[in-house]
Image (cartoon, rainbow, N blue to C red; front, side, top):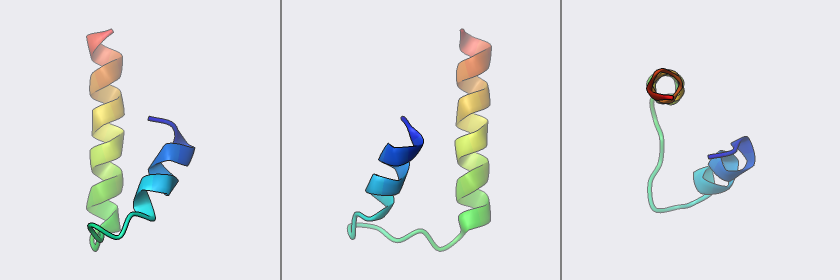
Length: 38
């Protein structure tokens, strides 16, 4: 997922992120996991 897609999905009104610190950590962890699997 590209950064532009993330911002586009954040504009989606279906859900609202309230804990940005945790959300950012999840994104970082997901990317690091993808790195290790490659």
